[in-house]
Length: 158
Length: 245
Image 1 (cartoon, each protein chain N blue to C red):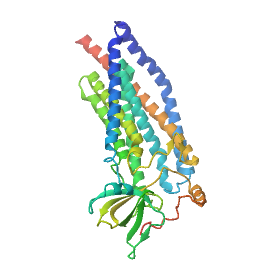
Image 2 (image 1 turned 90 degrees about the vertical axis):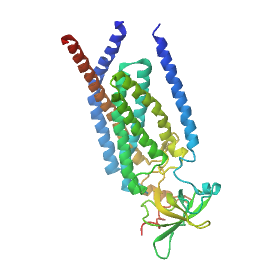
Image 3 (image 1 turned 135 degrees about the horizontal axis):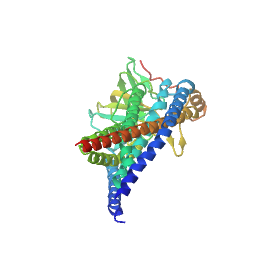
Image 4 (image 1 turned 180 degrees about the vertical axis):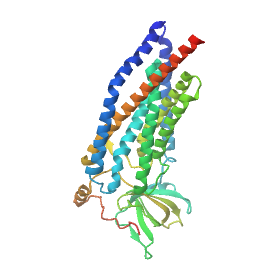
């Protein structure tokens, strides 16, 4: 019975290490909450309004019915929403295939002036965690009040 | 004094017999499940309403990600067992799992990048999910490097084991990155509450996942047998050197 002693010691040390690591991980995750975010949502902007010209990523859903092209056909305007707040965006450039009304989007850019729209330099499409065949999506779409709107691909490529 | 030594050598031998019997089954069944799962995924399963045909990379990307994470947990538990109970098979498991897990993590990262370009519009971003998954791959590489760093094999293994255990902090970070932080990567599709993947797509995904799991186990068994054989050769060479020297 002399051998278990160092074994128990090692087990206890390992246990302490795992607990300490878990605590450190949780603390780090909480501390990173703001800085590890890949984008800011429209309602985050109200809390800490960015300066005009300050570059950041704006993320949220493309508001249904908000996508429009300007007269020259090159500038795309739409509204990014997180259901709590809205931010109008303007963008000139290549639009990713999955850019759709009602789907997620992340735009990198800045406000050109205070009160003006968010001018995006780069546009990334986010998609949700749902995977289904087109027929199923169409059937769901027919249900009244369903937010899924795949026909609204009006913002797609120029 | 001889008893624990015998015990230590008996187990790898017994394991070897088991591994020899199991390995061909694991490989054959693994390749079978993978072929059926990916076959259905590529040719029978429907395209996605939003992503179209691109979605079919799911059947490789998702299982690779699952077992890159699962394999890491297994490796860390083996490292813990090696550190605390000094079981020789546990130390061998760490060495066996590391490169297989690294390969799975690499498959996940590469297929994810290929998937991201046509859907998101980018090969790579430094968001919480992608970054933590890259960290997992680097942790695997770190464990592999530490094993061979030290001239004294036992010391190298100990350091590698410590890194493997410390690295488990990254596992919940990968899992919850998409919930804790705003990320480009979407949240989990399969949760305790249910799945948001249509059954026609979920079935081939699960078949492919079983294939990935069996192949992971088969590859680890092959590596363990190789490592046991390697050790035996080394012991024999040492003995011969002692005799002639």
